[in-house]
Image (cartoon, rainbow, N blue to C red):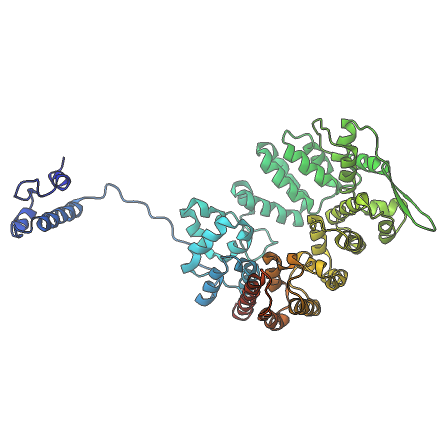
Amino acid sequence: MDTFVTTAIVGTGQANEALPETHTAIDTLAAQLPVEQKERSFLLTAGALAIYKQASSLVSSAQTLPEVAAPETMPACLSRNAQLLIGLFQPPYTILLPEALERLRSSGHRIPDEVLPQCLAYGTTNSEHRSQLAPLLGERGRWLSQFKPTWKWASRYLVDEHATILPAEAETLWQEGTLEQRQEILSRLRTQDPAQARTWLEQVWKQEKADVRATLLTCLESGISDADQDFIEQALNDRGESVRLAAARLLLHIPTSPSVQRLLARADSMLDFKKSSLQNKLLITLPKQIDLDWKNDIAIAKLKQDKLSSEYWFHKAIGRISPQHWESRFDVAPATFIDALNPNEMGKALIVDLIKAAYRHHTSNWYQPLLGWYIQHVLSTSLQPIGKAARELFAALAPADAEEILTPLLEDREKSQHPLLLLPAPWSASFSDKYLTMFKTYITTNPNDHYSFWDSTLLFQLAICLDPSKLDFALEIASTELPEDDTHWSRQRRQNQLHSLATLIHIRKRILTEI
């Protein structure tokens, strides 16, 4: 064992009086150290020896330095803007991040080098923001992502200024790129040359794994036509269940295919429309027994045996068929068909099926009557949470039409939070003003009512929904001090929530003026 290590272990008090020899020039220097300061002399000698050995060692092999990052094509944003962005990486401020990132992208600037590690780390744990962050990282950010496995997401995205044009290296990316890049290339090619995109996919089909086949197959939805039918029908027999399901969803957009015709026949046997001078009626007739073939006709994809009821498969069928089928079959306007629904549990379930179908097939002339019935008979009479299907359809509706449908809810305090869940941001100045007026009346009259309204997620959503011209009005309301004589247990909590809302509004104003 090394003499110095041995001495350090047993202690200088147990060792010989003399310092250990190094058999180097250090011994000459060590001899000049004071003997009475044994511990200090020992440490100085050991330190000198360590430096001596390091200075005399040779590197066994030189490491190859990585290639430098490509030259930047975008200027970096101001440092203060970058610091503002970093502040949005912590809740509850994250709700403001998408708007800030979009404004930075629109300005033609990227994130500066000094904050790239924070941005890459945030994108690692918050995948929903990656598609917005990736274009703003610049060449240096994508270069930096190679040095940490968890940052590799940044290099998976195809980033360029022309999001619909095929890059020069399109074929190379299609063959060798990441799955995300291949998806993007195939989607872009699909918009320009649908047949060529299908050919590319056919050429690599057998060599891809099932999950990759399923992902790439969904790219064919854009520009889908009868020409795609044979290839998609073949995919129905794929070994991978995810591929079969993806193929079934695509065939729904080809109404002339045999698979969809069988689906329509099953649905027609269960749903009928009876016209009457008094009240039109929708008649539902569920089969008493169903076999696997019956279910396969609705699922389109081949299924294993299951025990699901005929009612389940009825709703499955209605949710898959374009509402235009009922419009054509019964020769009725959408509103007439929808008004025939019975507002019972079956009717409420059926309206959700029709909403899913309208969104799936983009039948925009059905949007308003469907959502109008949903507001009147579901949201206004039920405490059930708003479903995903309704939120998606509201997002697809023209903003002015969506606001018109939801305006009556502002008169009902119990339903006044629904616009925060249903209306995409930002709202119009008119609707923002109406909502803030309702909100001001609410918190200044009886703020202890309607606890659900004070859900932090909903309340803070207000900061991103409002039209920019109404932020000062909102700030005035959020700065309201609740009555001091209010002894309700939640007063302080609600006061804190208002203060947090005011902070969010202040930050959003900074985003709108500084970025």
